[in-house]
Length: 290
Image 1 (cartoon, rainbow, N blue to C red):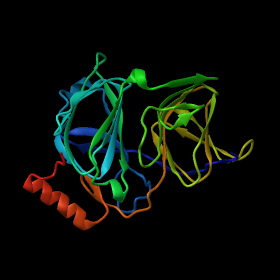
Image 2 (image 1 turned 180 degrees about the vertical axis):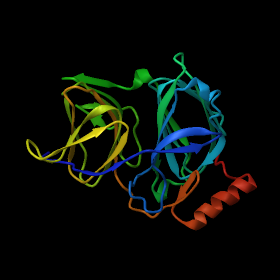
Image 3 (image 1 turned 45 degrees about the vertical axis):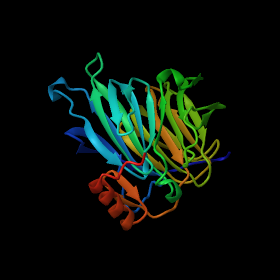
Image 4 (image 1 turned 90 degrees about the vertical axis):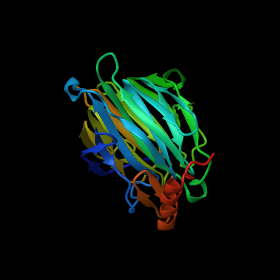
Protein backbone atom coordinates (compact mmCIF):
# COMPACT_ATOMS: atom_id res chain seq x y z
CA UNK A 1 0.00 0.00 0.00
CA UNK A 2 1.82 3.11 -1.18
CA UNK A 3 -0.27 5.10 -3.65
CA UNK A 4 -2.86 7.42 -2.12
CA UNK A 5 -5.69 8.32 -4.44
CA UNK A 6 -5.70 11.85 -5.82
CA UNK A 7 -8.90 13.88 -5.95
CA UNK A 8 -10.29 13.77 -9.48
CA UNK A 9 -13.32 15.99 -9.00
CA UNK A 10 -15.19 17.88 -6.26
CA UNK A 11 -18.95 17.97 -6.82
CA UNK A 12 -21.31 20.58 -5.40
CA UNK A 13 -24.61 18.83 -4.52
CA UNK A 14 -27.66 20.25 -6.26
CA UNK A 15 -31.11 20.64 -4.71
CA UNK A 16 -33.78 18.56 -6.45
CA UNK A 17 -37.41 17.67 -5.72
CA UNK A 18 -38.43 14.00 -5.69
CA UNK A 19 -41.32 11.83 -4.60
CA UNK A 20 -44.29 13.76 -3.28
CA UNK A 21 -42.34 16.98 -2.83
CA UNK A 22 -39.17 15.90 -1.02
CA UNK A 23 -36.23 18.33 -1.24
CA UNK A 24 -32.87 16.56 -1.59
CA UNK A 25 -29.21 17.39 -2.12
CA UNK A 26 -28.11 15.22 -5.06
CA UNK A 27 -24.46 14.61 -5.90
CA UNK A 28 -24.75 11.67 -8.32
CA UNK A 29 -27.64 10.85 -10.63
CA UNK A 30 -28.16 7.99 -13.12
CA UNK A 31 -26.70 8.81 -16.53
CA UNK A 32 -25.78 6.71 -19.59
CA UNK A 33 -22.15 7.87 -19.22
CA UNK A 34 -22.03 5.76 -16.03
CA UNK A 35 -18.94 7.61 -14.82
CA UNK A 36 -19.38 6.53 -11.17
CA UNK A 37 -19.88 2.84 -12.04
CA UNK A 38 -21.11 0.90 -10.02
CA UNK A 39 -22.74 3.84 -8.18
CA UNK A 40 -25.78 5.41 -9.83
CA UNK A 41 -27.22 7.94 -7.40
CA UNK A 42 -26.43 9.59 -4.08
CA UNK A 43 -29.00 11.73 -2.25
CA UNK A 44 -28.69 13.57 1.05
CA UNK A 45 -32.09 14.25 2.57
CA UNK A 46 -32.73 16.58 5.50
CA UNK A 47 -35.95 18.11 6.80
CA UNK A 48 -34.83 20.40 9.58
CA UNK A 49 -37.21 23.33 9.28
CA UNK A 50 -40.57 22.82 11.03
CA UNK A 51 -42.06 25.32 8.60
CA UNK A 52 -41.72 22.65 5.93
CA UNK A 53 -44.74 21.03 7.55
CA UNK A 54 -45.75 17.38 7.01
CA UNK A 55 -43.31 15.27 5.03
CA UNK A 56 -45.02 13.64 2.07
CA UNK A 57 -42.20 11.18 1.34
CA UNK A 58 -42.09 8.60 -1.43
CA UNK A 59 -45.42 6.84 -2.05
CA UNK A 60 -45.51 3.36 -3.63
CA UNK A 61 -43.19 3.24 -6.66
CA UNK A 62 -41.29 0.60 -8.69
CA UNK A 63 -37.61 -0.31 -8.99
CA UNK A 64 -35.81 -2.75 -11.27
CA UNK A 65 -32.16 -3.52 -11.99
CA UNK A 66 -30.60 -1.77 -8.98
CA UNK A 67 -29.92 -1.85 -5.24
CA UNK A 68 -31.05 1.00 -2.96
CA UNK A 69 -29.23 1.74 0.29
CA UNK A 70 -30.95 3.88 2.93
CA UNK A 71 -28.92 5.10 5.92
CA UNK A 72 -30.72 7.11 8.61
CA UNK A 73 -28.92 9.40 11.07
CA UNK A 74 -31.92 11.20 12.61
CA UNK A 75 -35.65 10.61 12.39
CA UNK A 76 -36.98 7.47 10.73
CA UNK A 77 -38.43 6.04 7.51
CA UNK A 78 -41.44 3.73 7.49
CA UNK A 79 -41.34 1.34 4.55
CA UNK A 80 -43.53 -1.32 2.98
CA UNK A 81 -43.44 -3.20 -0.30
CA UNK A 82 -45.29 -5.40 -2.75
CA UNK A 83 -43.79 -8.57 -1.24
CA UNK A 84 -45.45 -7.94 2.12
CA UNK A 85 -42.39 -6.56 3.92
CA UNK A 86 -42.81 -3.57 6.20
CA UNK A 87 -40.97 -1.88 9.05
CA UNK A 88 -39.12 1.19 10.22
CA UNK A 89 -35.56 2.35 9.54
CA UNK A 90 -34.48 4.34 12.58
CA UNK A 91 -31.39 6.34 13.65
CA UNK A 92 -28.19 4.51 12.75
CA UNK A 93 -30.05 1.80 10.80
CA UNK A 94 -29.33 0.73 7.22
CA UNK A 95 -31.56 -0.99 4.68
CA UNK A 96 -29.81 -2.53 1.67
CA UNK A 97 -32.55 -3.48 -0.78
CA UNK A 98 -31.82 -5.47 -3.92
CA UNK A 99 -34.69 -4.65 -6.29
CA UNK A 100 -33.55 -7.20 -8.86
CA UNK A 101 -36.29 -8.09 -11.35
CA UNK A 102 -38.88 -5.84 -9.77
CA UNK A 103 -40.35 -4.52 -6.56
CA UNK A 104 -42.88 -1.87 -5.58
CA UNK A 105 -42.11 -0.06 -2.34
CA UNK A 106 -42.98 2.98 -0.27
CA UNK A 107 -40.72 5.11 1.94
CA UNK A 108 -42.33 7.63 4.28
CA UNK A 109 -39.93 9.75 6.39
CA UNK A 110 -40.91 10.78 9.92
CA UNK A 111 -39.33 13.46 12.10
CA UNK A 112 -37.52 12.37 15.25
CA UNK A 113 -37.91 13.93 18.72
CA UNK A 114 -35.68 16.83 17.65
CA UNK A 115 -38.00 17.59 14.74
CA UNK A 116 -35.36 16.55 12.22
CA UNK A 117 -34.94 13.91 9.52
CA UNK A 118 -31.44 13.30 8.21
CA UNK A 119 -29.93 10.56 6.09
CA UNK A 120 -28.66 9.29 2.76
CA UNK A 121 -29.78 7.10 -0.11
CA UNK A 122 -27.33 5.40 -2.43
CA UNK A 123 -28.19 3.44 -5.59
CA UNK A 124 -25.80 0.67 -6.60
CA UNK A 125 -25.98 -0.94 -10.01
CA UNK A 126 -26.46 -4.66 -10.61
CA UNK A 127 -24.60 -6.52 -13.38
CA UNK A 128 -26.63 -7.73 -16.35
CA UNK A 129 -26.65 -11.28 -15.01
CA UNK A 130 -28.41 -10.17 -11.79
CA UNK A 131 -30.75 -7.44 -13.01
CA UNK A 132 -33.71 -9.83 -13.07
CA UNK A 133 -32.75 -11.65 -9.86
CA UNK A 134 -35.07 -12.26 -6.92
CA UNK A 135 -35.59 -9.13 -4.77
CA UNK A 136 -34.17 -9.26 -1.23
CA UNK A 137 -33.42 -7.10 1.79
CA UNK A 138 -30.51 -6.81 4.17
CA UNK A 139 -31.93 -4.76 7.03
CA UNK A 140 -29.29 -3.87 9.60
CA UNK A 141 -30.11 -2.20 12.92
CA UNK A 142 -27.78 0.35 14.49
CA UNK A 143 -26.72 -2.20 17.11
CA UNK A 144 -25.62 -4.65 14.39
CA UNK A 145 -23.26 -2.19 12.69
CA UNK A 146 -19.77 -2.50 14.18
CA UNK A 147 -17.96 0.67 15.18
CA UNK A 148 -14.19 0.99 15.21
CA UNK A 149 -12.75 3.70 17.48
CA UNK A 150 -9.01 4.37 17.75
CA UNK A 151 -6.64 7.36 17.76
CA UNK A 152 -9.37 9.92 17.15
CA UNK A 153 -10.93 7.90 14.32
CA UNK A 154 -14.43 6.46 14.58
CA UNK A 155 -15.79 4.33 11.74
CA UNK A 156 -19.19 2.64 11.42
CA UNK A 157 -18.66 -0.28 9.03
CA UNK A 158 -21.76 -1.16 6.99
CA UNK A 159 -19.99 -3.00 4.15
CA UNK A 160 -16.33 -3.78 3.56
CA UNK A 161 -13.55 -4.03 6.12
CA UNK A 162 -11.84 -1.44 8.35
CA UNK A 163 -8.97 -2.29 10.75
CA UNK A 164 -9.88 -5.97 10.43
CA UNK A 165 -13.56 -5.37 11.27
CA UNK A 166 -16.07 -6.47 8.60
CA UNK A 167 -19.46 -4.90 7.98
CA UNK A 168 -22.68 -6.95 8.19
CA UNK A 169 -23.85 -6.31 4.61
CA UNK A 170 -22.42 -9.08 2.43
CA UNK A 171 -22.90 -10.88 -0.89
CA UNK A 172 -23.21 -7.69 -2.93
CA UNK A 173 -22.04 -7.97 -6.55
CA UNK A 174 -20.09 -4.69 -6.50
CA UNK A 175 -18.01 -5.85 -3.49
CA UNK A 176 -18.56 -2.44 -1.90
CA UNK A 177 -17.06 -0.44 0.91
CA UNK A 178 -19.73 1.65 2.63
CA UNK A 179 -18.54 3.32 5.83
CA UNK A 180 -19.33 6.35 7.99
CA UNK A 181 -16.04 8.01 9.06
CA UNK A 182 -15.64 10.64 11.79
CA UNK A 183 -12.22 12.15 12.52
CA UNK A 184 -11.45 14.22 15.61
CA UNK A 185 -9.45 17.43 14.99
CA UNK A 186 -6.04 16.51 13.58
CA UNK A 187 -6.80 12.75 13.35
CA UNK A 188 -5.75 10.80 10.27
CA UNK A 189 -7.41 7.80 8.57
CA UNK A 190 -6.18 5.46 5.85
CA UNK A 191 -8.48 3.03 4.05
CA UNK A 192 -7.32 0.48 1.50
CA UNK A 193 -9.31 0.42 -1.76
CA UNK A 194 -8.40 -2.07 -4.51
CA UNK A 195 -6.91 -0.76 -7.73
CA UNK A 196 -9.60 -0.32 -10.35
CA UNK A 197 -12.46 0.19 -7.89
CA UNK A 198 -14.47 3.40 -8.04
CA UNK A 199 -14.17 5.50 -4.88
CA UNK A 200 -16.12 8.56 -3.72
CA UNK A 201 -16.48 10.36 -0.38
CA UNK A 202 -19.41 12.52 0.70
CA UNK A 203 -18.20 15.15 3.19
CA UNK A 204 -21.16 16.26 5.31
CA UNK A 205 -19.64 17.65 8.52
CA UNK A 206 -16.57 19.77 9.22
CA UNK A 207 -13.51 20.04 7.02
CA UNK A 208 -10.27 18.23 6.36
CA UNK A 209 -7.80 17.04 3.78
CA UNK A 210 -7.36 14.17 1.33
CA UNK A 211 -3.72 13.43 0.59
CA UNK A 212 -2.43 12.19 -2.77
CA UNK A 213 0.83 10.60 -3.87
CA UNK A 214 3.22 8.21 -2.16
CA UNK A 215 2.93 7.49 1.55
CA UNK A 216 4.75 10.18 3.54
CA UNK A 217 4.72 12.64 0.65
CA UNK A 218 2.38 14.18 -1.88
CA UNK A 219 -0.05 17.05 -1.63
CA UNK A 220 -3.12 17.65 0.53
CA UNK A 221 -6.32 19.12 -0.83
CA UNK A 222 -8.80 20.69 1.60
CA UNK A 223 -12.50 19.83 1.41
CA UNK A 224 -15.31 21.25 3.56
CA UNK A 225 -18.91 20.13 4.01
CA UNK A 226 -21.07 19.72 1.99
CA UNK A 227 -19.26 18.17 -1.01
CA UNK A 228 -18.92 14.91 -2.95
CA UNK A 229 -15.33 13.93 -3.76
CA UNK A 230 -14.47 11.63 -6.66
CA UNK A 231 -11.05 9.97 -6.53
CA UNK A 232 -8.64 8.81 -9.19
CA UNK A 233 -7.21 5.29 -9.09
CA UNK A 234 -4.77 4.13 -6.43
CA UNK A 235 -4.70 1.62 -3.60
CA UNK A 236 -5.77 3.68 -0.59
CA UNK A 237 -7.47 6.87 0.55
CA UNK A 238 -5.76 9.05 3.14
CA UNK A 239 -7.84 11.62 5.02
CA UNK A 240 -7.00 14.00 7.87
CA UNK A 241 -9.16 16.43 9.83
CA UNK A 242 -8.01 20.01 10.21
CA UNK A 243 -6.47 20.88 13.57
CA UNK A 244 -9.47 23.02 14.52
CA UNK A 245 -12.32 20.94 13.04
CA UNK A 246 -13.74 17.46 13.08
CA UNK A 247 -14.26 15.80 9.70
CA UNK A 248 -17.09 13.40 8.83
CA UNK A 249 -17.78 11.70 5.53
CA UNK A 250 -19.36 8.66 3.93
CA UNK A 251 -16.76 6.65 2.02
CA UNK A 252 -18.05 4.45 -0.78
CA UNK A 253 -16.03 2.22 -3.10
CA UNK A 254 -16.93 -0.65 -5.38
CA UNK A 255 -15.96 -2.71 -8.40
CA UNK A 256 -17.27 -1.28 -11.69
CA UNK A 257 -19.21 -3.64 -13.97
CA UNK A 258 -18.17 -1.79 -17.16
CA UNK A 259 -21.47 -2.54 -18.86
CA UNK A 260 -23.67 -0.09 -20.78
CA UNK A 261 -26.64 1.23 -18.82
CA UNK A 262 -29.98 2.75 -19.80
CA UNK A 263 -31.50 4.66 -16.85
CA UNK A 264 -35.18 5.54 -16.90
CA UNK A 265 -36.58 6.92 -13.67
CA UNK A 266 -36.53 4.11 -11.07
CA UNK A 267 -35.24 1.55 -13.61
CA UNK A 268 -31.63 1.02 -14.66
CA UNK A 269 -31.18 -1.69 -17.29
CA UNK A 270 -28.65 -2.46 -20.00
CA UNK A 271 -30.75 -1.87 -23.12
CA UNK A 272 -33.65 0.26 -24.30
CA UNK A 273 -35.61 -2.94 -24.96
CA UNK A 274 -35.28 -3.94 -21.30
CA UNK A 275 -36.65 -0.55 -20.24
CA UNK A 276 -39.57 -0.97 -22.63
CA UNK A 277 -40.21 -4.41 -21.13
CA UNK A 278 -40.21 -2.94 -17.61
CA UNK A 279 -42.83 -0.36 -18.64
CA UNK A 280 -44.90 -3.06 -20.35
CA UNK A 281 -44.73 -5.26 -17.25
CA UNK A 282 -45.82 -2.31 -15.13
CA UNK A 283 -48.84 -1.66 -17.37
CA UNK A 284 -49.76 -5.37 -17.53
CA UNK A 285 -49.50 -5.94 -13.78
CA UNK A 286 -46.65 -8.44 -14.24
CA UNK A 287 -43.87 -6.23 -12.93
CA UNK A 288 -43.41 -7.77 -9.48
CA UNK A 289 -41.55 -11.09 -9.57
CA UNK A 290 -42.87 -13.32 -6.79
